[in-house]
Every structure is written in C-alpha cells, then in structure tokens.
Length: 339
Length: 161
Image (cartoon, rainbow over all chains, first blue to last red; front, side, top):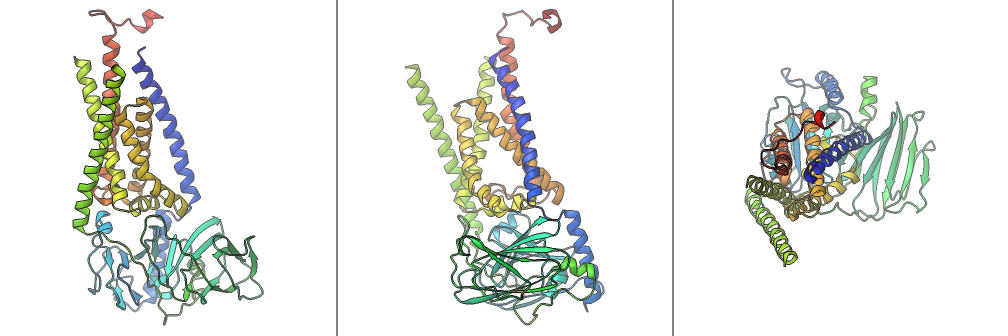
C-alpha cells in the first residue's frame, strides 16, 4: 500500500471521527442554549395571534394589528418586521441596511429615521427588534407588543435602553441577565410576575434591592460589583414581585470589534406571556402604555454598497497577496533544501 | 506525466480552496462584522452570548490559518483533514439552518460581501470538499498503479490471501 493510500485511508477515518464528534458537539451546543423550536414558536405565535384577533379593533381581514411605538429614535435603530403578508402603511422607515440585504431581508428590515417619534401601525405576525449587541434577534408577538411585555423565551430584549438576555436553566427556571449602560443614580424598575415557575434573576451591580419581603436576595462574594453580580430569586409561590435596581456606576464594555452605543432610560417591564396565555385572561403584568415601550437606542455602523465593493476588492487582494507570499516562501524553502 | 498533471490539478485545487478560506477570513476582519457569524449561530440554535462572541472573534483567524496552511503544504495530510473537517462543520450548520428556515435565506458568509444563499453555500462547500479530496484520491490511485512495473496488473486480493 502506497503512502498516499495510507494517508487517504487515515484521512477518511479521521474525517468520520471528527464528523461524529462535531455532530455531538453541535447537538450539545444546541441543547445548552435551549430555545423554542421553530414549531413551538410558530405555535405560540399562532396562539397569540388568535388571541390578538379578539383583542384588536383591527381590520377583520387581518388577524393582527399592533402598534409599534418608538420614541427618540437615534440614527441606526432598525426594526425587523417579519410576517405572512404584511402591509406597510407608513414610510417612516428608510431602506434596509446592508446586512439585512445580505440576508435577503430587504423588505423586512428597516432603519428607523433618526430623532423621530414613530407611531406605526402595521399588520404582521411577528416583529423582531434586532439588537446589534450580540446579533441576537429579539422576537415579539403582536400581543406582547400591545401589552408591553415580552416572551420569557426571548434571547435578548432591548427595551428602554436596557439589554436583557434570557435563557432557560431548567423546565421552570429562567435566567434573565440585564445590563444597564452608565447612568449614575438612575433607577431601573423591573417588575416580574411569576405564576408557573421560578425565576432566577442575576443582575450586574444590584446596589439596591427595594423589594417586598418575599424576595430572596443574595450577593455574590465580590459584593455585587461588575463583573460579579447579585442574585435575586423569585419563586412560584410568590405571585407578584417588584424589584428596584439602582445603577450607581456601570462600565459597559461592548463586544469585541463592535461599535455600539446604548442610551438609557428607566423603565423595563417583563411579562411572562406563557403564563398569560395559560390563564387566558388579564395579562400577568400590565405595561405602562404611556411610556416608551420599545425604543432601541443603538448606533450601528451600516455599510454602504460602495464600502462593500471596496471591502470585497480589498479582501480579495489581501487574500491573493497572503497566498502568493506563502507560495513564494514555499518555493524558496524548497530551493534552499535542494541546494 | 499523468501523475504530474494530477499533482498540478491537486495544487491548483488546494490554492482555490485556500483562497476561499483566506478571503472569507479577511473579509470578516476587514468589514469588522461579527454579526454574520453570530446571526448564523443564532439561527442554528446557539443562544449563549459567550459562545457567539468567541466564535465570531475566532472564526476569521481560523479561516485564514487553515487557508494558508493548505497552500504551505506543511504536514499536508493534517492541513487537508483540518480544512475538510471545518468545511464539513460549516456545511452541517448551514444544513441545519436551511432545514429550519429554508434554503433561500442569505447565509451572510464572507461577512455578507458575496450574496450567497444557504443552499448555494452548501453546494459551494461540497464543491470545495470535492476539490480538496478528489484530486488526492485520483493521485493515490495513479500512484498505486504507477508503482507497478509496466504491463503488470495488481494481483487480486483473494489470490494474495
């Protein structure tokens, strides 16, 4: 058997082994970041949409109508409207950003005009407010938007300038992490209602926990300063909880190689909409509709088409240069060896 | 002569694969864009932000290193194995996403500089895998037959046994 045959055989075995391990790893990654599956999400959305149809005083031809209200929109805020046959009723949105076009979302993602208050009615099944923080889309259903809440299975919520990530720790245990960019002395109010499960809330720099007696409060060893955090645990046997967090100072470190800025305001409301659906009556938590429900304050460096083509050329030239350098180096090395 | 030609084809194929890898990595670095990678991983079901950030930061460098490694021909077997495995992983992730969202969704590969859908990206990856493996397989077969004297056929396995 020639060395090449041996290599090929070994390579095939290695590839099969690596494929197996990669599949396993991927499955583990997927299970660790447990989110609702596509079918589950669809089911939830359709159930919510059905409820919404009863609630909305909307056109009977459309099951869903909701109000998307943003205020003090800064340049670069964008909104992703995903739907089955949606109708665009206003023109307060600019063209889709480059990244959206690259994903084929030209007619779904829009940059919101700067410094403009928008009261926008659109018929759709789903709204995704796309946060550029970690590139995680945040999904809102119309019902949740009307009521100012958010599903608990959200990957990330950016509401009133507060970024929240939610992940499932167990069947009825969720972890919500929220970050508040620097706003010394500003209070963040977090209201959570728990009916069907326990919540574990971890917060950065929870310097004050003005809460009802039922809330268990604990601090991690470092005293709750970033990057350590305090833990406030709420149980299912305590129906309504209120937690006030004060951020005295906060050092916000953006993700690597991103240019993101958040503004800060004071209201954040999280509703457990699954419990809401299960109960089928009044929302678990009623949002303050007078406030700014869903502004995203983010500055994102959108690329223009010209910049994209320049980048393509630059990337191509740089790649060719690198490869050429390696090829020349290889040839020189061989000549040296031969000599 | 034919062996030489096969070897030339193999090197050309390696260079093409290497160019794609290096281009994808450099494009991500140039455009300062993590969102493409992160977006894909989110679509694949990954929600851990630390995984997303790490993957997005490391991927461009990994792609560049793999591409240059392939053309450098230093430990070529390991280079091809690593590159093929990475391509296989990419294809697996893209397939998972395609099954969930459809094949027409833009994949955001090469930091969105090339408008590639998930379906196209899978076909492209399979082609790249073929470019890596097929020339080697052909070269192997030819080197096996070339190692025998002219006119002598390889003995059948059962005869050897």
